[in-house]
Length: 123
Image (cartoon, rainbow, N blue to C red):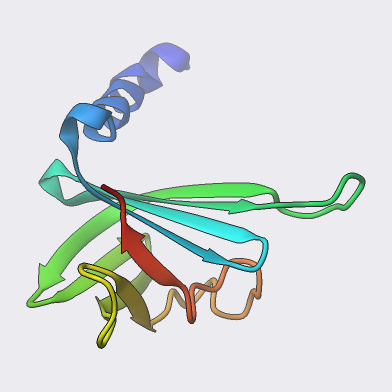
């Protein structure tokens, strides 16, 4: 089975390697940190990290691979059937983005919702 999946694993590893990285954004809200990476060929990754106290149960980390596109100044991310739109922060730092339309599957989760998170570009 692994032999059958190996081409897909290698393809995803190449698509999301540092050599193909075009831009990276990081945002924080409470105990949650989110990292959005944009790669060549419109591949993106979104990774959530949630700090937990020792002994506290719950999701600690989650990552998804998807696709991205630009529509003017807007950044559109698609993770499977989910779609989110990020717009430049009005009067904010250079290149910072904030969500204007959220991922349907994650909006109801306070730990995964990106509402109000300012994504700042990494240098």
